[in-house]
Length: 193
Image (cartoon, rainbow, N blue to C red; front, side, top):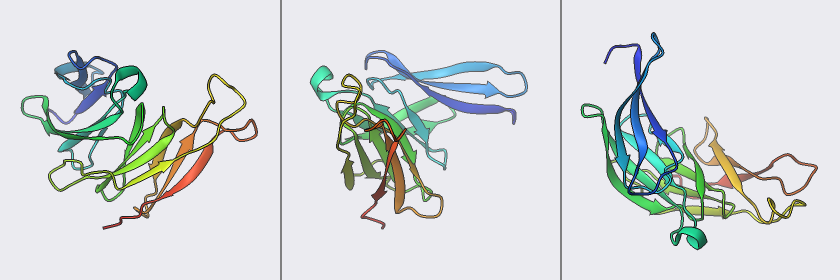
């Protein structure tokens, strides 16, 4: 692969028996995007994040216990660049329904997951081999807003860690009132080692 080409991973909405994650190359000189491989096996892998070391990929499985019969999950994959493929390592429950966003902290040791459907944010350790350990923290947001169809409860949209500390992250949920565009809470990671 020449220096103007970059590897991209693209997630999508797909049933587990259909490809939902695509491995692509993008040439920033020509603008060409090419599909090199795909992976089936995860339901609705709609959000992906690559570990800073480039060896692991993490994907949500955006599912809902009530609708799909299975709660949300997060999958870990090994990136195999030579064959343009990914290999599943393991998966863990996300701590809620419809996980929609992932963030790896600055140390590369923690994965934070936002669960839109249940309004919670979970913290999972990233182990040395790229697999995910069991959840160490779960922050459940509460409340509702004035729009009964969209604000019957909290909906976590994203979580962002700080660059200077692995202990603090801010999570944003759908507004609980008309006066604040986003409700942001601070999540303290109780396990720092």
